Structure formats: structure tokens, C-alpha cells
Image 1 (cartoon, rainbow, N blue to C red):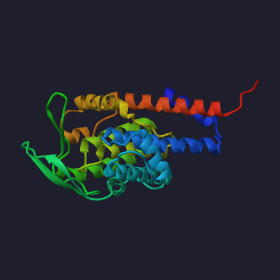
Image 2: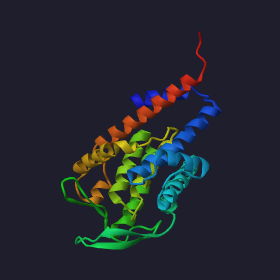
Image 3: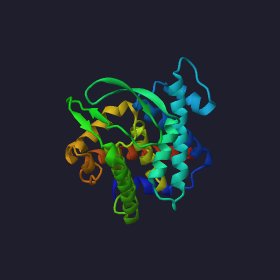
Length: 282
């Protein structure tokens, strides 16, 4: 039995958990997950501003309006994930993922971009719609790393949800392994013009919630470690997007180890908080 399985079993044995503690967990998760996932992507709201916004609908200090709307929209996406995951009869679909993208981005918008020949331009981002232009990232070595082309994106996304449905039914992978592999395969497709990182992390939350595990939070302070773990997997799978979108669990071992560590810490925290909430025998 793995460390994660042991901790999960220990948490299950501590049930029933008080309603007050569960509410405290849910509130903390709402603030921490929304803050960190958006912060990784450059949202400028402070933790305190995020807390006030999500709990009371207002905030203090100077805050960019787009960042405020982005945070609220991401919270709506988190609620959507929880609701969808609670229905065990509903399979993961591309329609759900597109709707999730539309939810967290809210409405079409324009953003600055760079053309393939290095020219600055403006592009319109259409929410909930697969990309119509190639997307890529410049690695730490200065090399261009490309994601799936617009032409192959739709087919790869259909393959992704079909694979997930089959893998979930076969139950050969642990929930954290299934979640990590879904994240990695999805991110190698990068199906949308924007919001892909946030969607990938919400999909991890979807899988864990669906299988009775607590959601994990990738801390914004660990952004480099998170990206480094993904990059190590890229070395294993190679540069061809379709190969990355069909990665095996062995090929993403660095990322799986990183995500497993986060889940272990989360379970340990939950176990400790349950024990501290209960009167000690003397």
C-alpha cells in the first residue's frame, strides 16, 4: 500500500468529520485554490484581496478589474467541477471541458501575441472554442516547444476523453496517477487560446473529487518546481505533441512524484486538523 493510500485510509477511518470542520476546509480550499492557480498565470490580486473578494464580494486597495473578474470566474469553474464530479454517472466529455474554459474566461477578449515569425500582433480569444492558431512556448534553453496544431486538436481531445473513460473503468491507475496523466496529456494538446494551465489543474481537482480524495493545490511559490516537473516529462515523451498526448504513466514519473507529494501533504494536513478538532482523552 502506498503512502497516499495509507493516509487516505486513515482519513476515512476518522469519519464522521464535523460539519463545522468540513465547512472550514471548503472555505479554505476555495480561497487557496483560486488564489494559487490564478497567481501562477499572472493574476495580481493578493491573498487578502482574494479572500475578501470570494467571501464578501469586495476587496481593498488597487486591483485590476480584469483580475477581479478572472478570480470570480475561476471560482465559478471550481464550483462547476465539484458539481460535475459529484455525478458519478456523467462521463468526462469534451463539451464539459469547453464549457469549463468558457466559464473561467467568461467572455471573448483581445490580447497581445507574437506571430510565428516573431512579430507583435493582437489576437481575439474566443472562449470555449478550440484554438485556430498554433500555440507554443519558449523553453529555458530558448528553444520553441510547440503544442498540438489547430488541425489535430479536436481529434486529440476526443481521444483524451475516450482514454480517460477507459482508464477510469479499468481502475489500474490510482486517482492521483490518473489525475496527473490527464493533466499532462491535456497540457501537451493545449487546446484553447487561453486558460489551459488553469483547466489542467481543475481537471486534477475533478478526478480527485470524483474518487473521494481531497483536491490538491499547486502553490504559486512552487511554480518553477511545477513547470520543471512537467518539462522533465517532455524530455521523456519528446517534442511531437501527439506523442505527449499519448504519454504513459512511466513517462510522466517526475510529474506524478511531484503531484503525489502535494497530495500526501494535503492528506496529512486534513488528518492533523481532524485530530486537533477533537477533545483529547486524559
